[in-house]
Length: 245
Image 1: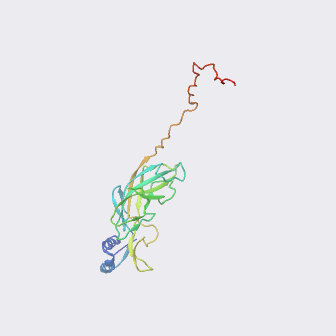
Image 2: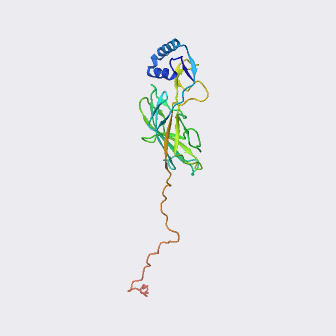
Image 3: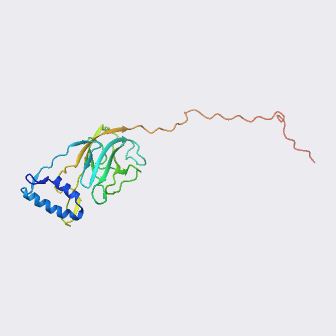
């Protein structure tokens, strides 16, 4: 649900204004916005508009982060990662993530959710790594975009998708009901939360089996080397035992 006055300010506009303010000024901005909203008839609840489906390469703003989904690939081998079953495969989604909040952030495990694909061993990624050095994803710094590999495991019995739909999670900057401090938090409306954006990307299949090293053909045995032959001068002769005393 979104909060808006009759012809007044929507939550998305309010959130955008709060995002641009420094932490020290956000209280003042919040008070001003509440006053302006009251002039337009108070606060009413209206359904949140569903986000439009975007194409790969389009940035999606989700509050404390901006995510640009770039593409996806299905493959059997991925570095040192081991599949739960040898017949399974990896589904790797590449996205550039930029932290837009003022603080460093650890991305939530459900930042991205997938539709249009079956047989995933878990709805959340099995792993995530930085593309530049393949190190495990940990803390991201503000305004330092990183290309990230989000990795799911898919059952080998499930069909390989030709495309997938990616939903990007969003958070809002709001007051915590217990501490009265302001944080980036999940929606407090309960139920299904409207994603920040939905992106459809094609999936490339790279399922070539790793090449095996050649082995010797069955039945072939190494030929024995030539046997040494006796010298013509010594053939048939035995060494002398020497004279007896």
